[in-house]
Image (tube, rainbow over the protein chains, first blue to last red):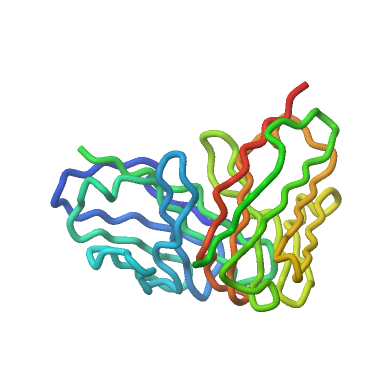
Length: 107
Length: 118
């Protein structure tokens, strides 16, 4: 199965700061999905098909990548962006796999 | 609007089975697949399996021997059953829908918190 490794595991950013987190796949995948999860709530689809923003996601978010390397970027950190972000792929036979998550905190 | 509502027990005895029902509204199970994902306390997400719109299923190989997913399209319900639970199965269990193989899961249930303990 394809293993997804997210880095860093934990990070903090000040309001207005640019944030980049990465997701590395053990084998090439066709696209990546990202979910945002805040404490005590269900995950939300955040970025899908590598770079498409889900409905309601602010334009300061972007996704990019190909092959084995993908990233999620926030152009200017806001307090409401503090959450855990998970990448997920299903480009090969089952199972679908998730990365271990990046916990983003506000400074 | 699209909703997935889960119902199931919060406490399961070791070696017993877990059954959760995901009742959906705002869409048809004949058009969407429903996945099951779990999250142990303080940990990440783990995919368990899916039932597709046509009724076929795919399972995480690690759970294939003790997991079953079925549905009743007419009642808009998906049924999750896992056997032989142990303490490390303690987790929040989610159902979530997606449209096609490979696409993201766009709506999620509220989660069912399950504790395996005697």
